[in-house]
Amino acid sequence: MYYIGLDVHKKTISYCVKDAAGKIHQEGKIGSTRRELDAWIKTLPQPRMIAMEATIFTGWIYDHLLPHAEKVKVAHPLMLRAIAAAKRKNDKIDASKIADCLRCDFLPECYMTSTEIRDRRRTLRYRGLLVKQMVQMKNRISGLLMEAGVSYNKQRLHKVGYFTELMAGNEEIDCVRPLLKLSRETINRSQKLDYALLSSLERDPLLSERLKRLRTVPGVGPITALTWVLEIGDVARFQSIKNAISYCGLCGAEKRSADKVVRTPISKQRNKHIQQVLVEAAKLAPRYSHELSLIYEKEKQRGNRNRATLAVARKMVAWMVAVERRKQDFVPAEERGGTVAA
View 1 (tube, rainbow, N blue to C red):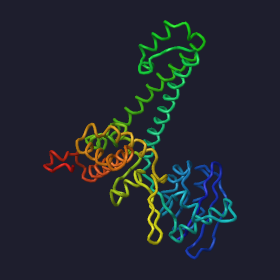
View 2 (view 1 turned 120 degrees about the vertical axis):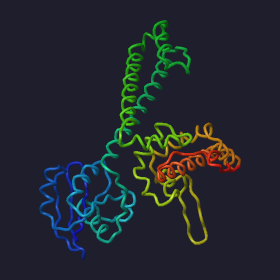
View 3 (view 1 turned 90 degrees about the vertical axis):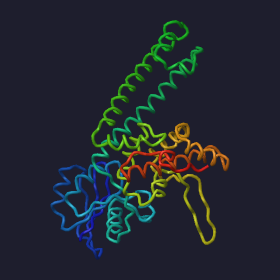
View 4 (view 1 turned 30 degrees about the horizontal axis):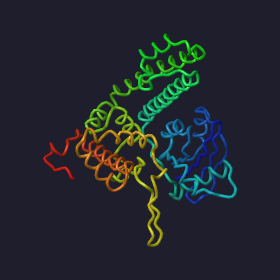
């Protein structure tokens, strides 16, 4: 078996080919194009395994090389940095270190979901960018009105009818009228695009069945279900519910030394996209489930609202994992004949 380490960049890829004993057979640099990759892969010995660090360019390279190797692995960049730390660092050395980690089975591999899921996840994350821009534009409209000294109803400002009345019957906004109109048009375009993107994902045959099943869980709406499906991928990759909770960033890190155990705040090693959506969903979920409301009140008495919200989010993760594994709709405890813990 030959082990190939790749150090991937925007325009170039540095590579190092080693055998099982660690002897270098080839090393060099090629361009980051499909044509050069095709020509390069034909010169490599077989059988081979390939590894690279996770970057923004990794996805298409992974898909392109997958048919040409026994395995293609992607390394977690944060964990790889700790393993491959060295005094001298350049592309050639990095490629060699990645090959060594792969050869010795020390590569901190990260999960790569299917191409179909990654393509749809890209669409969902693009939609998230649109939402952020809409919020910025709404805040900018408020700022422009305050700069002009115009009084307005904060709750109704972004309603189409109220905004039209405000623009028509107020001479004080003449100095900012063009900017207000431009901002409102930008929000309208973004809302239409947002609706189109969500509709295309919800109607997708690859996702529709899973989305329908997940939405039977209390507190899980269309955005939460979509984010779960596209960020989690295959739920079978989690050995336990605790692993899923950890991936979603709903627990703290553990630091244990001798007899001393320190629990830190919420860990930064998580999927931030699913974490944000689950926390927001958990704030509303107790309204739709008696069981979740009991969990919220119990944890709130022990600590504070944030602790209670995290407890609700963890329970929602457990329910969604169970629904996915069993491929059945969620059934509340009252209908199952069980009792709700007080």
